[in-house]
Length: 513
Image (cartoon, rainbow, N blue to C red):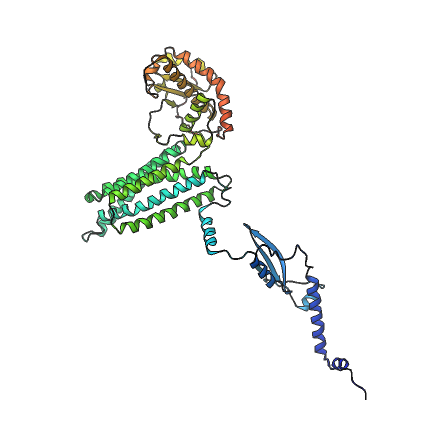
């Protein structure tokens, strides 16, 4: 009896459909093997980066997916996979090359999920610090923003009390208050503030000349306005005039804050990231303002002493404002920083660094107060009362584009500019004026034993005698010292190509005969 071969029997039972299925599976397996690259150490999953990412990669190491791209953003890496097309007909049409399905890309994050605290800190950093921090900003950015946040915290806290007082003074909390009258008073108050803002905005260029001084003065006006608003509680029948005056002061302070914001942020930006620095700086201020508002709301529920609360918050606000402007390091020379630089050079032969020069700048010097012993760009009639004094000094400055003199009667040194004067001529004239002032003080100390005020030159100049000899002496010193002063100032980082010395608009012109 002859046994049948089982394999022969099974093969005889295969139908034509089974044959086609076997061929299709064989082609699919061959195509998968052909498209899968050999596993090398470089292509192996980077297990050391993150165990989570390695586990996810293993899930995508199926033969139906193919790695097509890697990506890195801020230190975080992703891999992108695409799904293989297993259609045999598609494979055959592409001459055996494996095709990928359309719209089948899948992203795999190679990092494990961050802890909630880390995610929160990353979220906060994205709102409060510029990209690339701290390399994208100057070192003075951190102390400036710290004091700015503290100032806004106190300002937000104070705003709750002032608003509450204003509403009570205008009669919102009283039953007899007429809604129409309340609305009119409030509109008039805001309107007066806008008028004050427009009138003060005409100062224009002064916001560049004396940036720090005006910024601190604006914060003083903000506190003055808040004090006047609180005063309406004592005299509610004077609500409208007091509220209008307070709003004018506060809007003037707001103009100074807005006008000086961009130059300050520009000083912090290292590259073309001024927009990013500005946005993050304003975000920090708003966050601090909200925190201060929340704190004051909780304090107001306990009905604290208004005078004590205002005094504490006001002191914190002004202290923060002062430290805020002192922390700003500017590279340009305004009148205050130029005075510091020249006086240091004449006494020690060294120009102070940017940090030292800005820290020694006088913040309490009001820009509009005319008490300085040096006047740049005055009218001719203010500088010369005696025509002979002009004829005596004019030949000394024949090759210069400026004239420096002093008036014994007014006790001031004047630097007049010719119509061809440029930025460097203004710098040189200001330097010459400081040199002349230095000669006057030195001469006074050597010839007089009585103590005199340093900025009162009237008594000093009357004893100097010949004007021409002293101006000639100062001219020789300037010819020898101005070049070294400029070079050393540039070495310290000061910008000498442009100045913010705020010269007057008067210029001397050639005579027309």
